[in-house]
Amino acid sequence: MSTELPESAAPPPTGAGESSPAPTRRTFIATSTVVGGAVVAGSVVGGTSLIGAEEVTAAERPPSSRVSLTVNGTRRTVTVDNRTSLLDLLREHLGLTGSKKGCNAGACGACTVLVDGHRVNACLTLAVRLESAEVTTIEGLAKGGELHPLQQAFIDEDAFQCGYCTPGQIVSGVGCIKEGHTGSPEEIREWMSGNICRCGCYVKIVRAVEQTAGRK
Image (cartoon, rainbow, N blue to C red; front, side, top):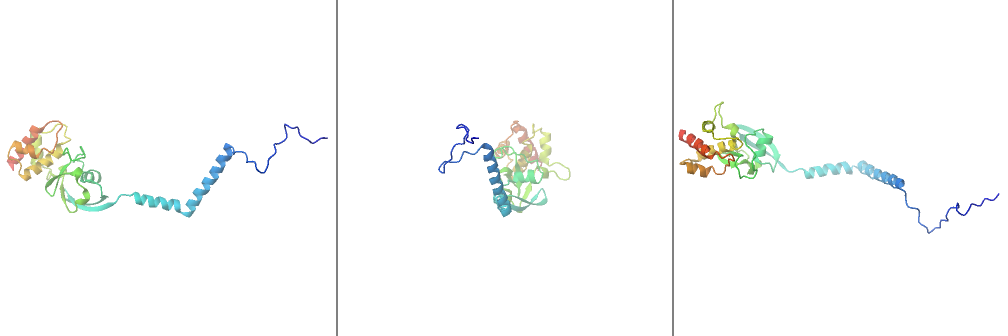
């Protein structure tokens, strides 16, 4: 019996110089999986993957500092990111949310607090620069459950509407009175001009400050 194959069924000759056939999709995926697994396993065994991740995390962590200050008569010590503003320290770390974040650019006065008796915009003041400072917020004005005279004057004069700017207005008013800038309504308006009231209660705010200054 003849063992010769028909010409169409005979396998094509392969010479030494011919290239191997292109890999199939299945072969490519299998090879990639094996190689990738070997690389990952080698890096984990060698410790480079875990150690490298820890080093990257440490490098990306922002610098922080420990600061001690007195807030409303209570000594507080916290560790904060060096970029933390006094406003964020009060609101996010100490839970004193009376001071409001309005513009966060020092233009509206909603975040006004007293630092060592002086008015400052808390959103523009770095917390780490206040070591040993004394900070007074709206929460610290009332004494023994009794409202500060200016807080009461705001109620008497109905010097607020939505109330969002009111904490900053009152603290700024307290500072204005302490500074002695209450000789006339015009002077009060000038020295309170850094505090914006979008509801337009300026006339009543000036009256409240004037009323409190007159009782002093």
